[in-house]
Length: 316
Image 1 (cartoon, rainbow, N blue to C red):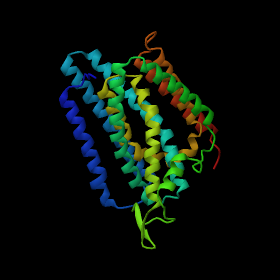
Image 2 (image 1 turned 135 degrees about the horizontal axis):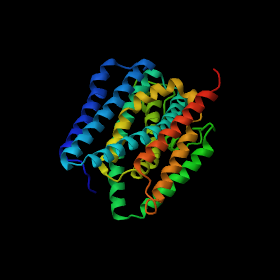
Image 3 (image 1 turned 60 degrees about the vertical axis):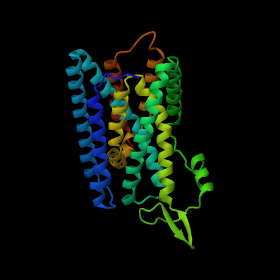
Image 4 (image 1 turned 90 degrees about the vertical axis):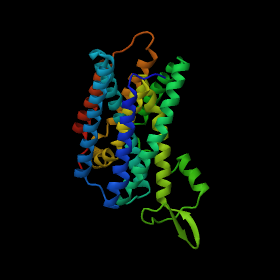
């Protein structure tokens, strides 16, 4: 797996991720458990989006400086932007499942922040491994592209048929397994994952929530990572676009939590995007759809779906 990014840019990216996690886990921890409001979520969402664009600008400059090619720098920065937007879009469906989990377990608003912070840390580690493995497989076995493409098309069709239906956690196999493996308290004990009842150390519902959030991210990573490989096979761009989208996931969760009802048709748009990306991947050896066209299609589908959702949103 070769990347066009110079070594120093890998170092800068790693340093940025460490700094971002330090802010989340150390500096912001001093705020204590609290409910995140819309204003705070919006401000942090704008910060993460702005930082992603700044990094994309740095990527453009680094490639231009190392290769001397403006056209190549434009192409790679466009790949990052497209991959970032696809990952952000697919994360919306992920967030809706998080909302269901939090609602099912009646997670107090003050505790949701910690669950998401730990979920983001796990997601970064997990996706890094999956991207490196996926990149190696694609380099060794070209035909896996067709498998990924077919999988995305089938996932998109499945998402379309499931859109609008209320998912249920009661029949979730992961939840059933967790309940068989460990006794769980009926009550929360602050932000603790374990508590003591009748002299026995048992899990709190918060541990069950973080476990389900982790399982959910594994499931969605299987969809989203192949989708970005349809845009670029450069491991640096795949990894950075994924991680930057994940770093803003917590803020986006609290923002969408307040307006979830207004985007009730968004899953239909996400389903179409998956089918489009899967088709693009399967046609790669016959006709390569330009990255700019892919970006325009994704933006167009999202815009149409969101406007349509807003116009047909039920009055509350």
